[in-house]
Length: 419
Ligand code: AMP
Ligand code: MG
Image (cartoon, rainbow, N blue to C red; front, side, top):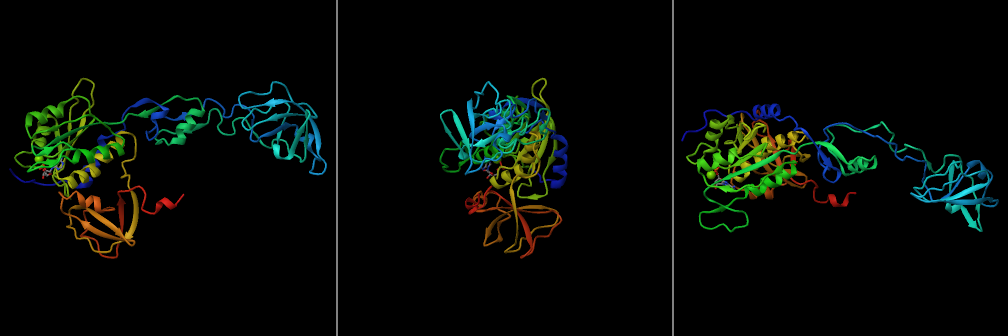
């Protein structure tokens, strides 16, 4: 056993990862599956929406000029010559002195240029009395008022919202080109580990890291492959590193320089260990490497060595694996957390030369540091509202100073009241 000779700076590792995580190639995705995915190419409309002049009201399609002079006291009478319903247009035209009963969303017949709303009309015995004027074009949606054929509707790089998928449906698109989601393999190692769902007993503890990582991978758009918990046996870990399938491997545990820490050596042997040891707290025994694709045509896979301590595992994932997974899927590398800037209620101590990931609470609008050390205390991340990152060059942060908190929750308590 020997310690880390030197530790890389967080920025150095981040810079390296930015260079090796271009968005994955595109694949065609159905509209039900495309929300949250990132478009790989521009989409232009092939059709006008609506493709016909569309009534915006229930009422009567008329020639606007036929209604001029109509009022509540002096209605004008028109002949009702038919009906236009959504999807069932009136076949004929509307001539002078004529009207067609029409519903919202139905095509406005030839000859008519306006729709007078039902509220100012009274129909009886084949005639309608109109008790107010309507100007030409009133209540008539023009062809292409929503989308024009040829319009660019969505650009490459767009993370698709539900309404984007709806718009794609409305222009007749069934599938869109999205960046492939990175396939993520999990390699969980530790002789002491029991599977999630079991009760900890004696010296055995339950593997909580795979549960946390599964949630984070889902958040970041990764596609998690099935995995097993492995003993700290080099041949088992080697086989898991080489199993075909993943674009990215997350190795939990055994990432340091201890006797049972086989993964760094194996990655160095089978591919390259680009970084091992990072100047940060927690997670300093983290590493990053690359392995050649396991099968012909497979891309090189990225390997993240995440320390087994649960807070370190979370922290190393957030700094290195998370941005990489998002970038591979075409998203922003930026941390996805909601951010608030608030004054510190108590100072944070930190050493120059190291990045700290500090779990904090937010109490009465002030940020209270809960823990900087204690990498094994998972409950610190549960009690915390979020994290403050102390940059490498800072020697802590003073009480009262404004700090940015990366919040774990998407909504703050009390947000429910907002629309
Ligand atoms: P390691 O990185 O393997 O040296 O593990 C560091 C600490 O994290 C030890 O106390 C392990 O028991 C614990 N640990 C390792 N893997 C996990 C896991 N998957 N879930 C929870 N704790 C773990
Ligand atoms: Mg271990």
